[in-house]
Image 1 (cartoon, rainbow, N blue to C red):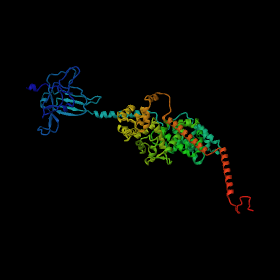
Image 2: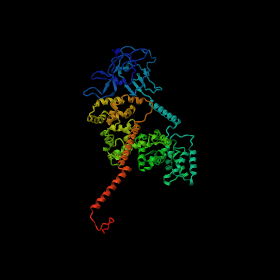
Image 3: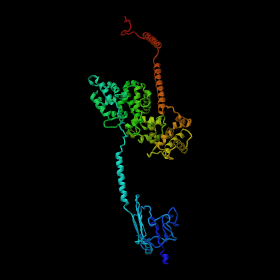
Length: 633
C-alpha cells in the first residue's frame, strides 16, 4: 500500500492555465479541464495531449489543495479552498526525445506571471530532493517556470522581461524617429502651382513696363491694356483683370509702380494660370472666386468681342447675358456646390482654355461651353415666358407651366423647399433667374454630372445619400396617376422597380447611390421615369438598342443640352420671323396703293361737288350770304 501510495514521482510539465482548467467541483465530482483521454504519446515528435497538458499517464482527480480561494456555491458546505486535479501515472514513462527531463522550455503564458503551489505531504515524501525544473528566458523574453521538488514547493517565477521589452521598444521608437528625421520627403502639394525654374516672369514684367513707358506721362488707360497684356504673354481677355488689379478702376489709369506692385502680389507667389487668375480676380485675402468676381471679366468680353457688337446697342440686356454666363460657369466649374470656385476646381475645369479660344474665335455662338449667345437667347426666352409679371422671379405655379406641365408637382415642391440649391429666394417661394438657369440645364441634360447631383438631391428625401425603394415609389405614384388620366396603360411599380434596378445595377441591392447613377451612364432614363412623363414615354417608344449604340460610338456628339438649345433656337427664330411677317401683312392691309388713293380722292371730290349743287338749289336767298358773287342786287 505504501509502495502504491509512494509511487515514483515523475516530472509533470504543464501550462499555467492547467491550474485553472483542472479543477474539480466537489458537488458534482466533475473534472473541468475538458479532456476525454489524456494519454501520453511517447513518440519522436514530442509530448502531446488533447487537453493541452504535457504529462504522463491519465488524469485522475485526487484531493489537491489550490491556494486561491473561491466563493462557495449557494448551499454548499465545503470549505473555501477548491481542490485541484492531481496527475498520477498509470504506466512508466520514458524520456527518449529529451536528454535533460528536468529542464524544459514552455510557451509564455499571458495570464499568470508568478504562482506558487504547495504540494501535499505524500508528494513531499515521495519527491527526490535534487530534482528541479527551471525555464530561463532568452531573447524572446519568455516566462521562466521553475519546479522545485526538493524544497516541498513548485515555484513559477517571471524575470524582468517586461522592463527589457519596454527598453527595447523605446530604443526602436528612438531609432525610427531618427530615421524619419534623416529622410527628406520632397514636397508634393503646391496650392499655387509647382514652381518653374526657368521662368520668364521678369522678362514679361520688363516688356510690360516698357509698353507703359511709351505712353504719355507713363499712364496706361483701359484702351491701352491690350498691348500690355500681350507683352505679359497672357490671354487677351485678362486685360480687364490686370487693369482692375493694378488699381485702374479707382484712378482711371495705371502706372509702372502700380503695375509692378500688382505683379509682385500676384505673379511671384503663383506659378500656374489657375492660381494667378484666382489671385487676380478674387477679393483681397481670398483664395476663391464668387459670382460678382466674374462681372468685370464678362463685361469686358461684352464690350470688346466682335461677336457681341450687336449687343452694345441694347445695354439693358448686358446684365442678363452676364448673369447667364456666370450661372453657367458655376454650374460646370463649382463641383463642390459651395458657391465659391477654388483654385483646384478652376484647374480641373475647361474655363481657362475656353477663355483662350474666345480670343481666336470671332463667332461667339461657336463657343458652346459658356459664352454662346444662342444659348442665352433660349434660356432667357424660356424664363420670360414663365415670368408673367416680369419681375425676374417665378413662382411654383409659373414653373409648373414649363413644357406644358411636364414636371411632376412633387419635384417642384422639392426644388422650392431649398433642399437642392441653397437660396433665400427659394425659401420665399420664388425662383431667381440664375436658379432657373441651373434648373433648365439640369432638366434638358440629365447626363451632366451636375444634373445627376441636382436630381439626386431631389429624390433623396431623407438626405441619407441613398435612393431607397420608398423614395422611388413616392415619386412614381404621381406618374401612374398621370398615365391613368391620359388613358395610358399603367406600368406597375414592381415592374418599374425591376427595370430601374437592372438599368442602374447598384452595388447594394435595393439602394441606389450617386456613384451608381454616375457609373451606369443612363441616369437620364432613370430620372425621366420619375419626373417627366413625356420623356419617359419617349424612352419607352425608342429603339432599345439606341442607347447602347450611343455609348459604343467613339465620335464625340453634341450634348443633350446643345441639341436642345439648337432646336429651341430655330423654333424661336422661326416664330419671331412669322410674327414680323404678320405685322407687315397687317400694315399692308391698311396702306392702299397709289391707284386706290387716286380713285378715293376722285370719289370724294365728286361727292362734295354734288352736295354743293344740291345745297345751292335748295337754299333760300339770304342777304347775309356772301358765299357767291351774287350780292342780292
